[in-house]
Image 1: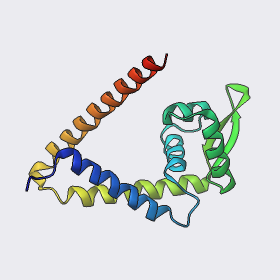
Image 2: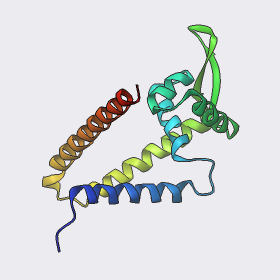
Image 3: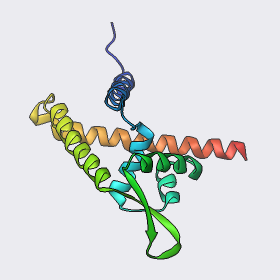
Image 4: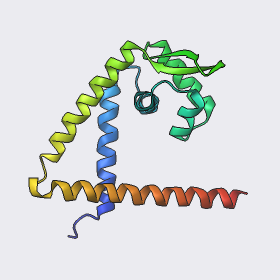
Length: 153
């Protein structure tokens, strides 16, 4: 029997991460989409909703619903934009900061656990290889999206 293709392993990993997220979010107000909003704010600080939409490649209307839901459970708040009195920024609340700090710690722990499964001498090469694969896949996805858009025009 042939060994699995790299793509098969990557799909397996993606599926395992999706199942783990579904398990983790079960019974909470969180979802992958809502966490995407929280990660964006966590990394960039308070931002306008259109910035979140662009970062996540979704419509502003979609972001409005996600922000509304996160605001309702106390993870984000809309605050005045100090550079534009007509605009509002979306920022993390203290509860949102606490959630993201805990999530960062959990990610670091899982990262360490996963890397521990690789021989110490191979870890740097594995990380470089995974980064190269991710970069190439991002490039292919971008090229395909541009081609799709050109065909639709």
